Length: 99
Image (tube, rainbow, N blue to C red):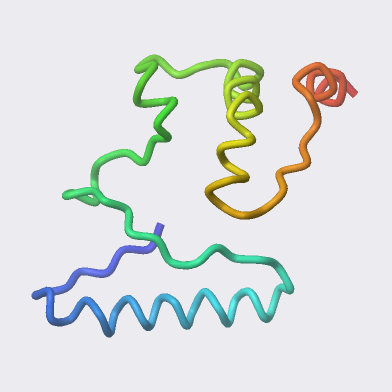
């Protein structure tokens, strides 16, 4: 992950704009969809990035269990993002993972 050390909050808007431009250029070059710039919400860049599920469990979880949890809340994800999340069922996922 790229970090930017700033000496004041006044430098933040310009730094954020530069990162956003860099992301847009990367998306144009690769033809891939790149999510908009999001605020990490951490007070220290050394803190691990972990999903809510990872923080809640505290011990990590098997990928099949993680997929099951994500699949179970897919309708909420679709409602918040406004995008359809057409993903295989957990049974289909396990079968795909075996091949």
